[in-house]
Length: 595
Image 1 (cartoon, rainbow, N blue to C red):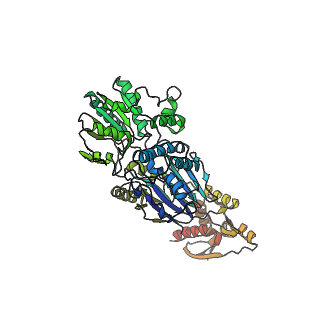
Image 2 (spheres, helix red, strand yellow):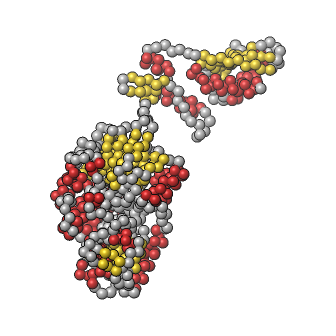
Image 3 (cartoon, rainbow, N blue to C red):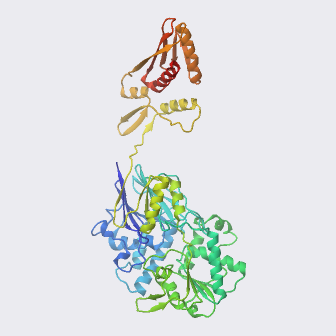
């Protein structure tokens, strides 16, 4: 049996640094190539020496697929292509190709120019890397080579996020990347065909969560923001430039409009202005409502939300600020946090998942004092709120996707080990599927059944459908096709017996089976034959049943009654091997009558 091998170099029982090696049908595919936000040392990038100890890796990897532009999914790509050395094909969607280089460049600036780190990629590396990328459209079938085919499906989550279906020969795998099964204010829900892959590799960030209704969370969020600004406090909402940022902006914009509020709302510029332009550019990737209203009013042209200037940090009075990045691990959001944290009137609302090691994670776990690299200690007196506006699928969403695409095996990645374990048991119990949760560097081997495609002759198909249509409809009846498998040159074809004999140039042989029954029925044997004829006719309404010379015939089946006028009669039933099913049926019918 051909095996599918999967080894996570990142995101195995862990969130961050997604990078999964997939081997199927003799091809090696890298799914995502991300970096870890919680580390600043060599653990930041996946360990590419696992593929080969040194040198260019083009000969070892057939293609790289990037699911979306978040840095934990594409952050190591320039390092992999330009520093380690890979010049093979790279695939991502059009919005991902447009937005990823902006985020990569922004992160490089923070890491190299502000923190002075070495062993990082350069600005030129990012540009050279993006030149190697091939952009794909949704549902477009792309042949990487003569055997390897990939296709992208809409994943929700963020602009341009896609799930990928990958096929080599008869084996197929679906990799979800990050996805969201519920539509939100600016994106639709993930969608995929019933493609029945051998393996579904799914993210499991919220493996144990079933989120309450979105409306409740939105109401709660607005209430908290309003309470804080009423008491003159400042609200900091750390977000990533794309995704939740647009979601929450649309939410606040409509609320400010409705309530006629005058408190300023700011957005840390730079990245996000560009980001909103991309939303306007790739409007087809957003949801139905935004596309409908797009002509009259663009949802991304905000009236109440103004660009933020660093000088506003110390401004007195209430304000709401969206700042990047979302986990408070660097940049402007962290700068503002340090300034505002010691004041109990202020509030920070964390709208999404925070990786272990980031300030966001520490704050959410109740840390009251946070120490920074330069021995600076910040007291956290401000109110800390966590509200999941995360664009990941929750447990219910993951189960829904499994139900949709009907895989034969499931693998969970991009989640915490204990939570995965819980969901793994649930999947086993509900779907009776094998579920794998490999750790980083651990290989899972999935056995798949081998499917051999064969042709079927038209004559055989017609004969089968005539037979099937003659029977009363029954959706549970399986359709069995009898034929001879003929292998010639490199093709395999199922034919009916006469065709196969002609093809092979041989005469057809028949095997005839005969069975004898004893039956108690007084009177002449012709009368018994009459009775049997009526019985068979009643049971086989759509078949041609006739009586000639005292023998009943149906197709190749013959029924003959012999015996004197006394009670004991012998009934002979004979049939050709091709009518095995019909012969056995008539024999069974007569046996029950004889008893």
